Length: 88
Image 1 (tube, helix red, strand yellow):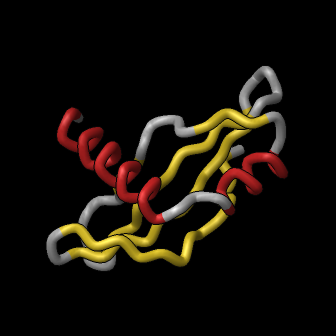
Image 2 (image 1 turned 60 degrees about the horizontal axis):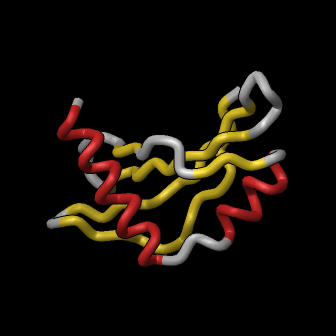
C-alpha cells in the first residue's frame, strides 16, 4: 500500500511555481520500504515525482529518513523530478 510518510514544510520555488514536497513510501515484496518524493505545485501544474530515493528496513526507518531531508537535498530532488517529467 502506498503511504504518505511526511509532508515537508520547506517550500521550493521553480520559476513562478511554489512546490510542497511530500515523501511517499511503499512496502516491497521483500518487506523493505522504498521511498520517493513528490512535489505538489501551488498552481494547477503537474505533480513532479522522483524515482526511488531510498530503501529502508521498515516504515519507521523511512519516516526517520524523511525527517532529515535538508533544503539542498530537496532542490536536487526537484531537479531529478523535473528531469523525469521531461523524459516521459
